Image (cartoon, rainbow over all chains, first blue to last red; front, side):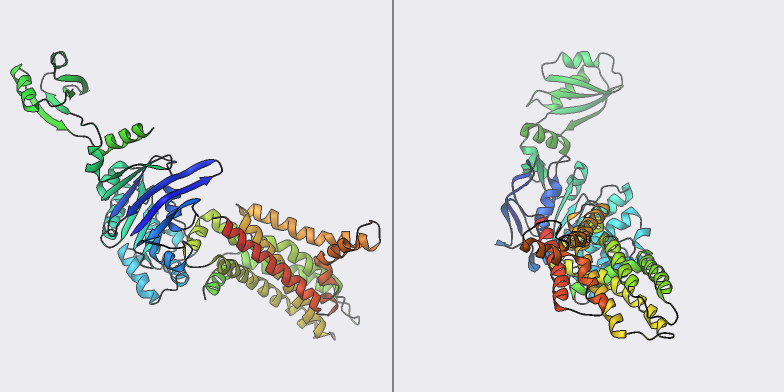
Amino acid sequence: MITANNLLKTFGSRNAVNGVSFALNKGEVVGLLGPNGAGKTTIMRLLTGYLQPDGGSITIDGAQIEPQSHAFKQRIGYLPETVPLYEDLSVNQYLVYFAKLYALENRNTKITQALHVVDLLDRQESLVGNLSKGMRQRLGLARAILHDPDILLLDEPTIGLDPAQVVDIRALIQKLGQTKTVLFSTHILAEAQETCDRLIILREGAVVAEGDVATLAAKLVPQTAVDVQVQDSTGFETFVTSRAWCQSVSQTAAARFVLYLEPAVSKSDILAEIVGQGFAVDAFTALENNLEDIYLDLLTQSS
Amino acid sequence: MRVFTIAWREFRQYFTGVGGYIFVLLYMVILGLIFISSVQPGQPLQTGVINSAFLTLALFTAPFMTMRTFAGERQRGTLELLQLTPVTHWQLVIGKWLGVFGLALVIVLTALWLPISALLFANLDLGSIYAVFFGALCVFAATLAIGIFSSVVAKTVLASVAISSVITLTLWVIGLAAATLELGLIGLPESVTTVIRYSDLSSHFRDSFAQGVIDSSDLIYFASLTIGFLSIATASLQRQR
């Protein structure tokens, strides 16, 4: 659908984007993940055509299209991190203005459709300045999808929202992802894991990893650990640290421990050994690498 | 069509707040007071003071009329959105200029009541009056184009006012330099003095429109300033990518 080929962008002497390449396929939700200053917003702005790359190219459906062209702009919808609005206009006037700039036919129908998608139909006459943060975000989304683009670029769309609004916006992104290609940037790992089909992890303007969560996890050294809760912790730590299968132990609560194990040991044998030693076990859970581990590990590896 | 959408939005913005009304009121009060003081029963109308007032007001208010056009949009973040629509940079610049020129048109048309009311008790040369008002529109066209350019290159609205004021005041003050040259006080090559004299904005208004004369060389001067500054504003906007 849309492909970034070796994109470069420098501001002064700083390389904000340094040879970034990736492809977004039709109908997938892709997360652009990275710490602050990793180049997420700059990449978004390059993809929208707002910024001109110093090198590389952007293709849509295999064809290189001039980002300033009418055809390019019709296919891209963009929601900046801070939703820019005209506070003196009503919700309807705001969308009518952009509908006219996009020269949309059947303006009223398209505005109604966009407001329906973001669930703002009943606020058409409200002044933009009087909307809550969540509603502003929704209005920004309505504007981004107004011209029915097939590629949606959302820059930190849940930032600053309360938990209920975050859940709503994530659900909305997933709904939009059923019919559109969505690239959204975030630094919230759980959000990326929950919402995205695929992740692109950035560091200092370069892609350090790309793939779905399972693929990224496979790049890590497998971590074998178990979370154990015992009824009486007396002597438990001394016991486990004396065993050959235990690399280290970490106490997380009064009677709860995370045991880091040597690779390829049988967890059921370990459980049997603990119980055989007379410890009453309330819980015994195998731990897997989560997205946070993957993310931190990838960033550490790349640095 | 997109140009008019932007122009209408820009124009309406002045009157959804108080900004537009303040500008119109300011002109009405100042021009009205000057007009009343220059009317003497049984004497011909002294238009010189009005002409100067019109020119001075236009030069000083244009930076404030245009400061928000681009710098304000940039500060609000909406400039980025406008540039993502299929609107070209040229359409954006022309649209903004037309919108703010609409405000200037309202000011000039509103000020027309002054000479019209004077017709009740004096004989006026209407042709001269129309020339003055047409000249005022030409001054506005050029100074607003300068303001638009300043707003494009400025990061904040205050910086826009500063840049615009410096340029317009330079074009105004250059008249003093021109007068000095007339006296031959500074020995400069003829070509340089010609350029300086031609650059003087106030003389293009004072020596023609204000005298009831519409001269093509003055029209070319104001058109060149307008088109020139709108062109470099467009180029600057393009370069900011």
